Image (cartoon, rainbow, N blue to C red; front, side, top):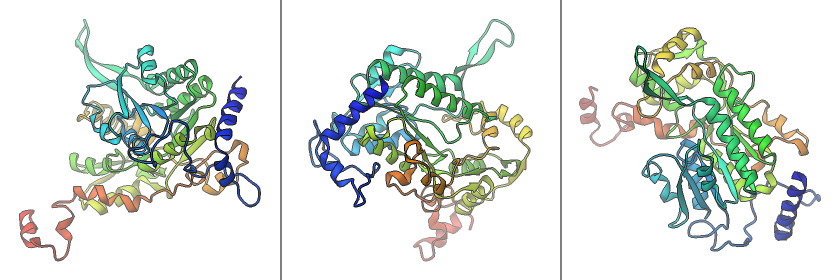
Length: 413
């Protein structure tokens, strides 16, 4: 049944896009499956493309309020998609996403992850569903009990519920409601053997989605960096808030971070022609890998912070993290015991780019290269949002800046 459905969907797409087939065929007779979309008009599409156009596609988005979600909404809104935004918070919590869409091209619907019917209301008549729901920590809140000490921290959503149960429910609803396509955002760290519960449940979530909706497209990004990240900003904020910055076991684990807007572009490419990516996995990672020690040195070279970087054994740091995990500061804890476990493991793609390219086409795991997207280097982006941690800002060290002498005296120069 699944195979028949996929065949029918591909047949409809191919019948409606003869120009795309013609232009996507190279001179040797092969077909380039992952080229950018040919700008021919589709059913229900209006306008020249981009702003003030109608792309003819309705997209339901879970997790739109997160770091990656705002960039995905920007890409979709800029290209004329109609967005159904799932919102489980205050009505003003998602208002920053409204300007991403043209007037009347977004709909915000309240839902509860524990209420299946409310999740179905978000999906409604969407053509594509995107799931980006995820937390790097288990959300907790104070609660009372009858025995001493009468107060305890109650877990609101566990890793299992957030990374497995919610994606499974979304996938099951997509099957029941006959949604054409589902895009599930997982992680390159997803691993059933990981010591991090977050990484283990990310893997379990992938399997649950594939079981409920076998033709889902799975996006597996590396650690994300960008202006609002909790990656490079973590080093700068930790140096600002605490007397020392801990590196687990010397910070020798590797990571290959990717620019968040690049991941959003990947998702937009899939939304643009989802049938081509049915049942596929896309690994998304940056051009270079680094150790956490190298990243700490890189960040403090930009910020000019005199940070005391300490090599700390994992067990010691986990003990500290077990206390600091309750210091949320409004945007989540700076560190948790599970994050400590994750920082001891390599967070990199399982293959080199050359090995990805050499895979047989039928079972190929795709990368940004297959979609025609070139990843941004961390060195080209990080300064733009890390220089704010400098004392006096970047003008402080700019030669010839008017008022430089006064500014230096003001900040103790």
